[in-house]
Length: 202
Image 1 (cartoon, rainbow, N blue to C red):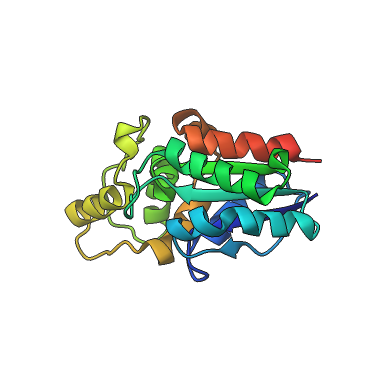
Image 2 (cartoon, helix red, strand yellow; image 1 turned 60 degrees about the vertical axis):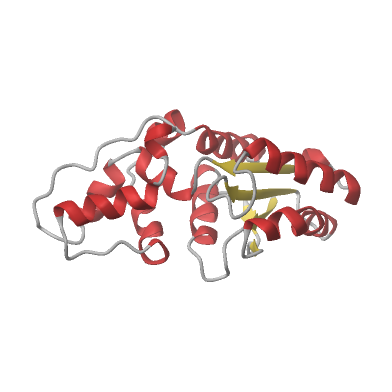
């Protein structure tokens, strides 16, 4: 089963490693191509449908188009608006819609990382012996907003010397989450991604 990914990150961003890692975690039998990184949300909205068609036409069985709901970057910040834009473009290019999954992350990738606080706690414990209170779970959409600032503020308050960098730290944090049932329970977009991967798993 050959799967493609279309992402809004830059080629150097951590997203490509994270989404493919999770896909293989939920279905190790997938053959995952090198992700297409379109560098911005606007790039995904404008080019995603055409890139998805190309991937399907050249041998992919399924394609995931993934982007963060926030920040808005000049758009509405509404998943339904983003999806409507992509649906219209997919209809125009004339590709098999059943082979494409549109995954709008609520609110952004880092929301997945903070939902289950065990990942942050284990990541910190791997870096220092400094005693710190637990980061805590973030179970609701309201608690998962501004996730980067939540991580930065926590570290600033409890360990002022340590700076969080999403490019350098996100993948490491993800790998410290012991299992993903809590994230799936507490973030709808993560559950959607997980269920779609499992549904196509051969």
